[in-house]
Length: 184
Image 1 (tube, rainbow, N blue to C red):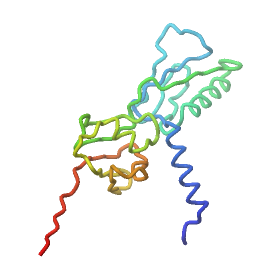
Image 2 (image 1 turned 30 degrees about the vertical axis):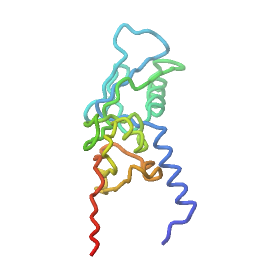
Image 3 (image 1 turned 90 degrees about the vertical axis):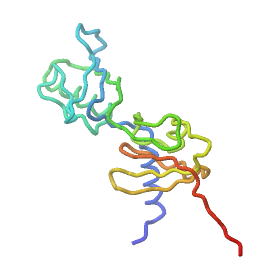
Image 4 (image 1 turned 180 degrees about the vertical axis):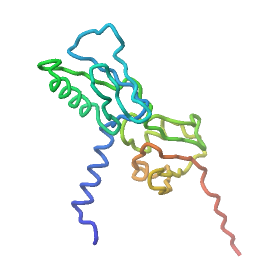
């Protein structure tokens, strides 16, 4: 069944939404402050490799991987209310160190290697600009880890450069393919 125009728009809208949110993952470090107090102990908590958040005020670790900071805050506050530790708890959580969303950039760039995303997705042109392409770079391949899809992108095409890069993607910048024309 063909995709209706509205469904396509919904998918595009959802894609753009990914550039505005961040779902935490293993090894991310969260700064957790409760009721604006300056606690004697550290406010920094690292998610476990399994994606759990352990905090002295939680009875059991909170499964935080895949949640936004707002969702974790809501769970935390409802847990404090449920245990009657605070009548109207105010929990302030922010990401201190981003570590879980990585991509790999290689090929014709000055700054190759692993890059860390601070959003669920960012446009390819941002990644390429950050990696500083060399003058001879003319195209890129993007391999999407989760689906094993490969995208071929022309660096000169603005619409292709809007492709959203996601965690796990591998991007390689390449020279133009030499094309020979023989005239007989």
